[in-house]
Image (cartoon, rainbow, N blue to C red; front, side, top):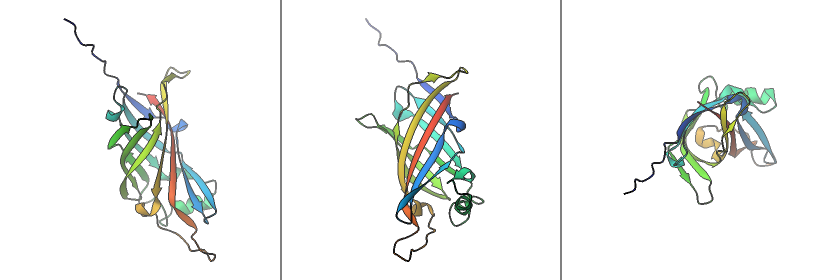
Length: 185
């Protein structure tokens, strides 16, 4: 009689390293070029099930006041009630509702994203996690890259101005890229 092998539980908790993580966005400006910006205040936790990634879970938040588009005047405007309204809505949040792995190995992580007080389900295409590595200080780290696109007006970010040549100042479609490094808790 043989006893079936028991797979050890491979569930671990990882914290986002805010110094090595960033949330970037890209949106059309004047309908001719993309403006890029970033949020550096990224925090959160990943509960990762190595044996079944579909059972993994992430909760993350972004401090909206950390926005940087390399133009202080634009950053001030983006923090105002015309856009993010940092005083009223200081944090963007995301939490997993479900995870699936596609046949090509890509992981899709879906869940509610809250921006400017509005919440909508979004899906991130995730590359990773990378194999774990030990840093010089003895910590174990992994990394992921995740991308999605949203319509900013779905989240109440509707400020715009018509251009005299036609079109608008700010595009509706926003591409989001997350570069996240996690430290094992």
